[in-house]
Length: 377
Image (cartoon, rainbow, N blue to C red; front, side):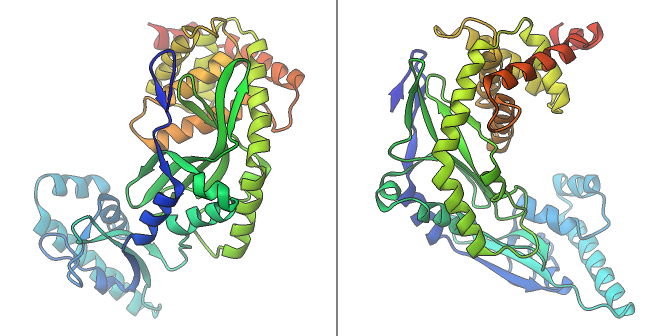
């Protein structure tokens, strides 16, 4: 555990081996069902097996029907479960009848289940049978296998977010600590996956700045080989090979990005708020995310070793704001954006980095007063 000047503690973590054991011990299974196998009782549980639905599982069931989401939400919130179940069952009968009338094969629905802490069955997602399942235990095991035996034994998982369906975390191991410009950093990898199709499967290099517990995700060509949607066929042997290549090069790639990030201190900027607003609009951030970014930048400037507005301070402001989100998926989105802002391309030199920020400054200078006022008033 590292205590920093502002009493932020970086290092809340658990051993990788503990996470592997947890994932392996979970009770999950999949079934192929027809529409008739998805019928509901009056409590909106599955008639066949009695499983209840997670929120996202029920949403995937409703997407099979023609019912508007607003209608489903209203019936659910106002305790009209029997009526909602009848509507859904009627839709399922209609879908099956349509297949029969048009001489189509009966629909095969890939149905995913897991147990909750009390042993109750939860239906968590429905897919076509083209869904390619690479579950969290498989992915994390592939990452672990890419480490040496000693690295695996001592590797630690930071900032784990896992609800049984979506997993996001950072992984570091011995040899990941860095000292640059008098500051402490860690390099490692960021892991993201979803067993219910809500996130891309990704394993990417990661940088953590210990003074403020911020992180950013580095986008590299080797990491792109591991970035996949859960659809079609995924060759798990090839995936494991791609992960080995990514993990094997992760520290070197993170080191390069770290040097680019720190070099951003020399790229002095005139109007940080204007630049942040411009970048927020270009990358389609919400109003709240842009405002959080500006607050994060102010906090960055208050650090003893920063002070001046620069590309470094702007990027660090974004990573600071990412930590304020209660959603790990939003934090990951913002950290990935920060990684893309570090340099225009992975192997860019300082001159290219500075030139890119001058182009950003030029675009930001064209923002209208009305747009600026909407954020700064």
